[in-house]
Length: 499
Image (cartoon, rainbow, N blue to C red; front, side):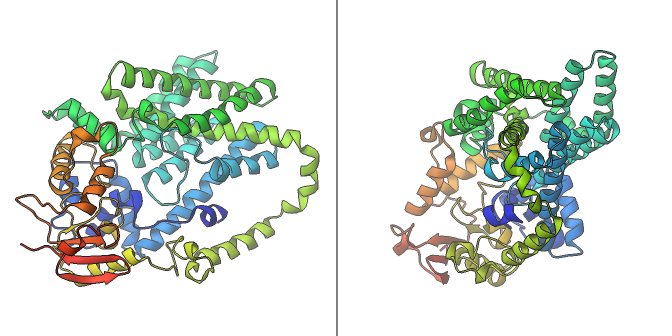
């Protein structure tokens, strides 16, 4: 609850633009008949398949908002539980365990490299994948290899990269830590993982190797790695601040690991060194050698695990250094206190619109929260326009698809990571947002697209959009050209596009 109080809770926006429209369409097939993203999404198998099927099943029984919030809480609680147990395994200290999760999930949760964290404030596929991945680490440490490999396989069903990367790391630990029969153990572990992961591996690998597709590889990789997702693929384009923050916790953590007495220290050493070695190789291959295909493994996602172990080591140092103070805090080790606090915080989160601070009224998008003007516009669109209506809107509006549940001629946020998709996406971004990719350079295209939308009215010859949504302040230069205002809330308005 404390995590949610601090970071808020998001629903029907952000990365869910690539998850929830599929659910809404399954629940109501009349929705999104002309949507760019969904019509192409249905032409192939995607890594969102199992998440979508699971959420759709439960959403046929309960409201989607309840399903997502419930899974969000479960993922958060079980992730915290797993890391409390992992920390205790290495330190035999409850206080170290508790401080570890405070650092991992709250204070240092954004100190990894590449825009990833162990849990976010929204329920998407990676949340549930990282829960099972965390339990895979825990079970492996407890020598429960069957449970570990099963957890790893389930993790892969929801986010194959998370499961795959952790499989590589754990197999590496087996190879470098075991003196006897390491090859046998590594082979059995790997074969079992692959067999259990076949439900996700077969469709993904068949697309890679059995379906021949002709496309401009250089343009495809530039579009995916730079124009659309600059924070996830190429280390040379990651913010310098990511590396600085990462170094701030990595260096002291390595020193603590060297000098402190920690159980199973060899596991942590091998785990950390494998991540760092993999990161160096990945960076050299993609940024120096130009092997763009290697970007598909997104190795820097593994810095999430490195960040977690660094937090564990820092917690060990904190508790050891201030041991005498922790002995006086035994009164806080009371489950009743935490239960009462959790209930109170839950009540606050579920009734955000009654909070006295304005920015908190919309911070928790569950229960009683105050809708923003843009959310009110989305709700009006949902209730007052036909299901087959097509809307053009700012690419910064990542909540429209989920909240308004109407089609778009192109969607910046929701994508399918396939060449055929990005070939059409590239052209549609040029047509509807007048993006000049040659001028974008090594930057995300969304900045130019958003600017063009606010300052220029120019539709393609075969324009499909029938309506548009604008902010009259941000789009004041073109406001006079926007006729046929259908609805307005605050600075946001819906207009009809003239034929």
